[in-house]
Amino acid sequence: MMDKFKTLKRRIADAIERHRMVDDGESILVGVSGGADSVCLIRILHELGYPLGIAHLNHGLRGKDSNADEEFVGNLAEHLGIPFFRAGVDLDTERGNLEAEAREARRLFLERTADRGGFSRIALGHSRDDRAETFLLHLMRGAGPEGLSSMRPVAGRVIRPLIEIPRSEIVTYLEGQHQPWRHDESNDDLGFARNRMRHVVLPTLAAEFNRRLPKTLNRTADLLEAENQWIERVTDDWLADHGSWEGTEFLIDIGHLPDELGFVRRILRAALETAGGDVWTLEDVGFRHMESVRSLIEVGKSGRVIELPGGIRVERNFEKLVFGQAGSEPVDYEYELPIPGRVVIPEIGMTIDARILTPDDVQPNQNGALVDGESLGPCVKIRNWRNGDFYNPVGLPASKLKRLFQKGRIPRRQRHQWPVLVAPSSSIVWVASFPVSRDFVPTGRSHRIIALEAVPAPG
Image 1: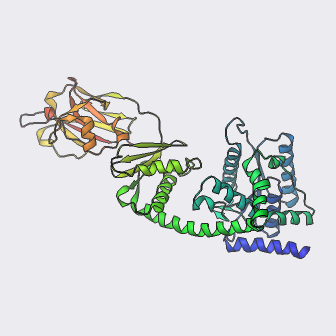
Image 2 (image 1 turned 180 degrees about the vertical axis):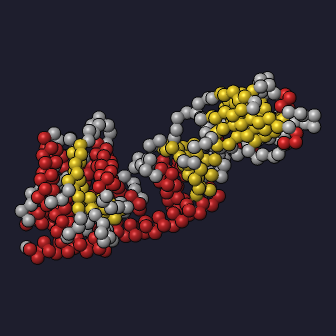
Image 3 (image 1 turned 120 degrees about the horizontal axis):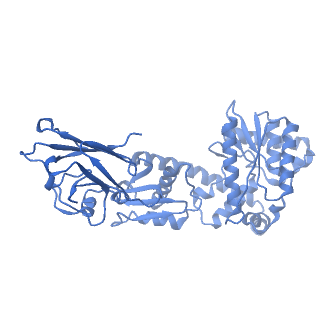
């Protein structure tokens, strides 16, 4: 029996080395619930001599039993001489997916604890059986290669040293070590999808089709993971060449999208992930949503917007797709700009200056316009664009400002708050980025010239 335990320990050590889970000198924060898998994990890693910490999140969903789990893990940490980090969380049991909410709460707790404690790795006790269950659950929900290859041995700083070990061997190890563990009765509740997969679906499939099904599914996941990593590298290279940031939004060039449908889908999803960073999750963004995003590539879709779960927004802006966070509705604004003077417009992060020049001081300015000061009073009004505004700029046909925005390729999401300067007579004097109005252009008889300039407001 002892040789068997040594073999298990060696297999786990080999998996850590083969998957390059831990580098020399790195410390590991181990998530320990008190269940068999996580207790086995902390015991093995302790025997292997890694610098460790134990983290336990009390979800409080099982009353006294949850508190008993926390006490058990605390006693185990004290027995092994390992630093113990604990926390509690109140979950909203009225919300939809309690499993997902609990999983997200644990992820955040482990990330924050690792950051504060200086741990470079986070170890989770997922076994070979867990990975097989996840594979089938994702398959039934319609996942692609990326979803089917999830629960990787290494994902960022998260490692899974037990990912090649069946649950039966974990239990045998603990029994042989006379090491108790906590049993969560909620894991027997068939009302949860994962429990049905674990206790009913997977055993039935194994009995009827392939008794080594968990091992087979793990091998399939390994194959998909290797191919997925290659696809991710190619996709990242494409985004590096054809993607760009504009403030907090990420843009890609539609004209450079490849012809291969699968590659396009990967690019779009990767663009969403790039734009979101840690702000949003794509967990609720499914195939139907992604196909809606892909439809924006079609001809004639400029200006169309797709709203995705989680407050994600994708807009077709001429030959660009813009990925960003859905914000609140734009608000109207109106300010008075004295001449001379300066106004900061916080709604758009812009400053507009008005300076008085003599004809000898006049110089071109690409950020502004020159206006005949004789036709203006002591101030002008600055407001956002309003539907129906009509403009008569020098060098362009007079038309509604909306049409000029379209010709000037001003993104639809920016038009509502685009700054418009209006004279006391209510005539439009100047619209930022466009030529000055014909009615206010300086002439050879102008003795007082106003230089208007629009620049980003200081930090």
